[in-house]
Image (tube, rainbow, N blue to C red; front, top):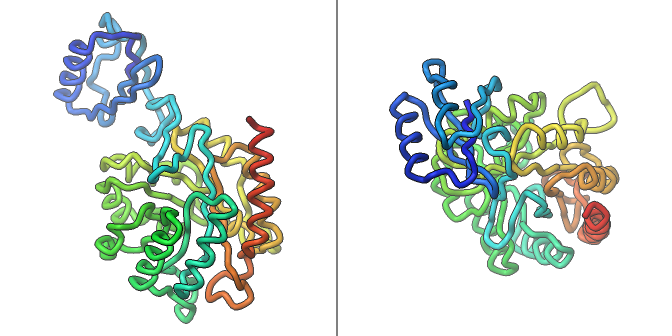
Amino acid sequence: MIVVLKPNADPKKQEQLTSWLEDMGVRVHVAVGDYQIVLGLIGNTEKIDAELIESLDIVDSVKRVSESFKTCNRKFHPEDTVVTVGDVKIGSGNFVLIAGPCSVETEDQIVGIAKAVKASGANLLRGGAFKPRTSPYDFQGLKAKGLDLLKIAREETGLPIVTEIMSVTDLPLFEDVDVLQVGARNMQNFDLLKELGKLNKPILLKRGLANTLKELLMSAEYIMANGNEQVILCERGIRTYSDYTRNTLDLAAVPMLRELTHLPIIVDPSHATGIARLVPPMALAATACGADGLIIEVHNDPMHALCDGAQSLKPEEFDQVASKVRAIREVLA
């Protein structure tokens, strides 16, 4: 249920209404906009008399929400959420470029790439320390050492770091990580999502390989329902019948999610295609359809990369993409 208050509603009466609703056994999520305040009621609202609430002099309207996702629902929070990472803002017109290698390999490698992508306009540095691989024989990442190398790159460049967490047991290692990424395979790792909901830290949530948009939003709901509203959604391609690309990039998801949720939405053209030459056109298309940012894999030597070299751009290629992305952003503005 959603309760929309009238402009300039009496704060004392709002507090009394909120207390009464909480006594009725529901959690009240307050969204303060420029022109109105929305109270989102989360829980069993069957016993709450909507007509009684609507009769109050501070209430403009009352609506029941049929969707199972509540906190991330745009009806609960009409204005776009802006997630802040250091000095970087993501969402509501604030576009972000996240770039870096699939996996951290050496200090020279990650620091060199970090400096290159920053010079090209990247706002955040991505890099995998813990790597979920399809084959148990593939490189699994440097783990704790990889996190240390990412922090060195951050010190050298000032770029906040984005890296994937795979297990609740690893959480203590991620205390000094700026953005925690939940990979596609862990999108429905609900125990992990609940724990991430207890953090005061941005979470980048990737859509699963075969998951619907509703399932993606319900995973975001797990994080937000536990108190952490700093969630960034990521479309990274889904499994279809295509046999020429690694996945199929669902760009229609961007405007559709824009209608459904207030959360920022970014796109990963690298994992979506799996082919470096397809990353630039898909990055530009994602920008044109209204994404709040891109996360792109960049490697200084893709031929010898320990992970996903085939989909990684060279620094000079990323520089060209970043320049074209800025041009499209100017047209959209």
